[in-house]
Image 1 (tube, rainbow, N blue to C red):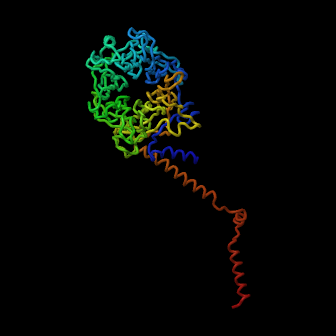
Image 2 (image 1 turned 45 degrees about the horizontal axis):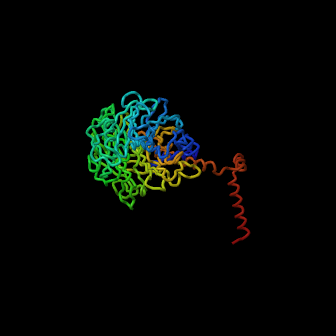
Image 3 (image 1 turned 60 degrees about the vertical axis):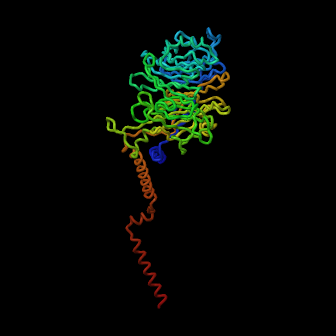
Amino acid sequence: MWLLVVLLLLLQAAPCAGIWKRFDLVRWSGVSGSDWGRPYQKISSLSGGGPPLQNASYFGGAVSNVGDLDGDGVEDIMVGAWGETSPDYNPLRAVQVNAGAAYVLFMHANATVREWTRIGSSSTAGAPPLFYYDRFGYAIANLGDLDGDGIPDVAVSAPGLVTSVVFVLFMQADGNPREFMTIRGFYSAANIPTNTTESEISRQNSTYTMNPTDLQMTYMMGFGRSLCAIGDLDGDGVTELAIGSESPSDGRQAVYVMFLRSDGTVKAWTKLASAVNGIPEMVNFNQFGSAVVPIGDINNDNITDIAVGAQYGTDGVDGRPRSGVVYVIMLNRNGTAQETHRISALSQEGLVSNGALPLISDDNCGASLANVGDMNRDAYASQRPTVPRLGTDVNGLDIRRSIEDIIMGCPQTDTSTLPGRLFALFLDEFGGHKGYRELPHPKRDFQKKYQTFPRLAAEDSFGSSLATYSDVDDNGLVDLIVGAWGDDDGAADAGAVYILFLRRRRWHSFVSDHFMYLFSIFFPISFFCCCCLSGCSFFCWHYRRKPDLVELAVKQSNISIGKNRERKRQKIAIASEDDYPT
């Protein structure tokens, strides 16, 4: 009973010490928080049922949860392998070097691959035509069901070394595209790079549909280096697509917000770049747009906000170049920015504080981002009496403020000795972060007792891509798909994908309003005090002095023991006076 009381007190009084912000991978043998028996699942050419891969395939360079394509009740995954060389015939090149490919992985319920489908140059009738160094599969985004056929559709980019294009693939249940639409502007015949020819540019211009027609493309701009469906900004029922782009000539990277129609065509677009459309002035060549992810409505204006990575960004603290920066951008409905906040090696807004992230040189943080929902349960913290109320719902209960959190990938691709890592950032309502959790943890995650994290090798580029997956282990927390395109399973730089089964380290129940919040704190304390008082009272009563058998017998005989003893004492005193007269 005492143990139960103590446990109840610790669970319910935890809010007094603050909301627990950390989460971890599940440990072996179904430790509290999950009934799953393993902390992760690796998928490569040698593990988990992955496809056979070539050298330098860079499988895992992009990952996306594409929903349940085949209708078996299990969500499927699409993985980019943008380094693959295609043997398909091309009238301009005998072999399409680095044309790229994308693999659709049909999953088992235990997170292993049941079967897979490859999408590459001329792989099926509906697949897009590819050219050498197209790097198809560099980024992938789930667009939902655009055409209303009940099957999710996806966007896959091909940010080639010379020209770039983004494909909207209308998928079939077997994992092959039925048809596609291109998102690509027009390339002029002027300033053609020396490593290509005018005939190749003409062929591409005639092959691909110009969509939109008013987007001026430049060579080697890396259009499509990142993709993300950011939700319906303009209220037409179709999600918008954010496309990251780089500009090697002037170093002014950008993110294009494309307002789509249901057929994949673009009806309008907005450019976000340094000192453009509400974005502050940024340092050139910071790789702004290396990743984009929606983060919900941070500022309560009913418009989805986004986080944008800049993996080469730096705040210049302690000489940590290319440590990485994440920009939290509050959007308007037309795709422009209301306000922008920064999270980096300094804390938000460039001020050194305890909230600063422990980033190092060449961390490349922000190369990938994923929204994992409200990991630290801000809705629970919002019930504190000190937090202003947002109003009440139809049942009269307080409206909880839930702030979604993100995972930031730091693949450390610019180093030759580090494997890559992740950071869980717990966002606040001001566009900053209130805490973080490093994965893998430098101490806990590699203990021999648990082995909660995969063993990584140098140059694995773990964290090069991120996506969330369904709750495979059924613990109320989404799981995480992590790409490691430098993994050497089966071939050099063949690549791999890890599915990490996450769990919270402590659990908090939800309470309905401020009264119940206070009740959850003071009731266990009062109950504990009552138990202590009752225990002390019982102890004093149980161990009080009790009469022995002689005393009980005397009491039953009605003998006045005290009076007889008093008479004896008086006689002794009189006798003493006679023996010793004064």
